[in-house]
Image (cartoon, rainbow, N blue to C red; front, side, top):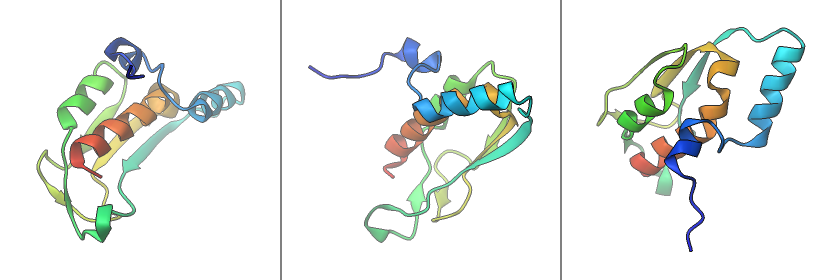
Length: 113
């Protein structure tokens, strides 16, 4: 048997790490949930490769569709290097925090990172 999340749970933000949920609770309780710009990047690449190919953006767009955020980044198939931002998310952190875990999983799996 495989223990996999179903697409509906992923889309509803139910497969996030608990610390993202806790962070949102703190931000809201202290009334400090503000507009932020998050960068997605890889610190290291497998086998110390100097570059990788960005993939999985269709899944990321589907995951984040309908949220009150701005999303932009490198085009699908772009080469990227360690520490180079490949994706930017702009909006209130609480609007996308629960999607960080699946977002990173989708982009890492598709890009082979």
